[in-house]
Picture 1: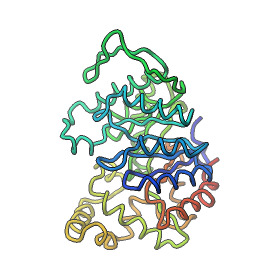
Picture 2: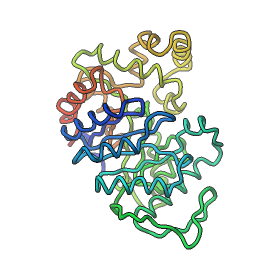
Picture 3: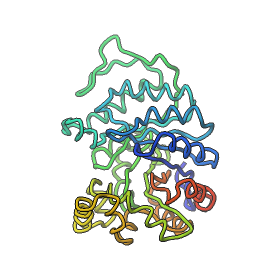
Length: 340
């Protein structure tokens, strides 16, 4: 089903590995009770394991879907990624989404060669999808091999366990459309970037004989909400100070972040550290990469994505100055105005 013209089908939320496991579980349980669609977990290098946190969430929630996004086939064989996803599905049947992608931070910190990364992701998607539908897989790829007589999962996973790709570059965008069930865009994602990416995704979908109706476009969106606009903006600044300089150049270009602004953030962080540099960031810069403000302002910001191709907005990591209070605002004052 394509995105309704008046809103979105669903809304997700998620955190990265810098959030403690205890707080992650607390937020996931609250999101489950509030009726959000999915709770997403990225895997940083080297912070908390997304798979371990997902297992904790799976045993403590009832309805919310659990997104593993994004796990790297450079650091774990695709057959093991399928095994992890199927094991989680056994605890939370029909609620697991497996996301795979390059994860540049993993390559840098493990000194892994970046050349051929798109091929690695392609082969990973092919292998994981075949294993997850119960096939016995023999595979002879450029980067991965499963020799004769082949191997299969010794777990009966849900046959519709979806595999999404984390993608930004043109080749990986096409790959996602051709081979995967969906895509997860990283932050700072903008409507402009999604509109740029959709024709490339559709090229891939055409190769697989599918349309955008058969494919989920999801995105991590930096959202900070509070009844007080200034508190919401200030609540986003530390994360922006810490993460902005490491973001993909295409994402920053579409967000209209200038080289001077990136240089300013880098300089301030180097001189003062993240905590002291954060208050020095201007509200205008934060507003380029984050949707921050009152519930009505966040609704207006998210509405800018309607019609871009985005089907699943994921409120990512910041959420607000008081994350539990802000999560309740998202569910009670933002989501009803956006989800059809």
